[in-house]
Image (cartoon, rainbow, N blue to C red; front, side, top):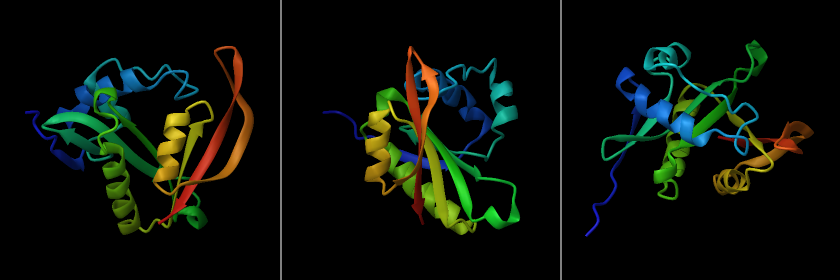
Length: 164
C-alpha cells in the first residue's frame, strides 16, 4: 500500500534552499518562462534573492515539493492592493493538489496583508498552467501579443488575475 502524501505549507527557511533550487532547475524552461536561465550557483546565492520567510513552501512527507510567493505589483501607494504571484511545483509532485493548496494559502496570506487582487503572467504555450490557473478562478485581463520569440516561434504573454 502506498503511503499517503502529507502536505505541509509554511514560510521558507534556509534549509529549503536546496530543494527550491532543484524545483527551479527542473520547472523553468522555454515553455514555462521567457527567461529559462534561472540558475543558482549556491543555496547562499538563492537566499540573497529569496530570503528566508519570503516564500510559502510546500513540503510533502518532509521533501520540498513546491513554492509560491507574492510581491507588490508596483511600488506605487495607489497600487498596494495588488500583488503579483509566482509559483512552481516539482514535476514528481504535480497532479497531487499541491498547487491548489499553495494557491489557497497564498490567497489567505495576501488577503491578511491587505491585498484585494492577485495577478500573474503565463506564456500562451504553457497550456497546462493556464488550465490550472483558470481552475483556481483566474481570468485573462490582458495579452501581450507575440511578446517573446522562443524556440523559433512568437509566444504571447497572458496576464491573469483574481479578486480575493
